Length: 193
Image (tube, rainbow, N blue to C red; front, side):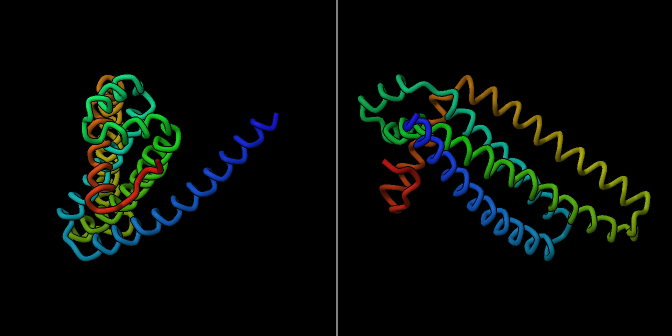
């Protein structure tokens, strides 16, 4: 009973910390995307929306790969001293936290921000065509762009899940190398040993 209470406390602490991190990152991403989109043309805004969508898809793929991966192949890579394999093992051992960060924090924030950014692009396009205040043109642009963003998000995440489940070891091997570079060369700690 004491063990489950300790685990519950750890889970609650993690949940609270991840909620705070989400709040801060969402605010930062929202301010950055809104300020960037306010000063650029609709076509650059559209590219920014697509980048945000693909960032969400990418991080969702990483989160699924962490939960789908097996430790054994990564241990074999670590035994052969493959660069980043130790970091990949740490990811698998902390798959719940890694997946929460990738899927829930970055993935969900990307979904929300891409919707907001798409709305800003719709307003820019409506002004460009001289239609605003809920005109048929603005509604049509809004429906079209929202549908495209939704289709790219859902379709991209479906492909990402397929890749994550079938190539989890390779994906985490790559992520492990990136984390190793950040840790060893730039002294940025992403994972706790």
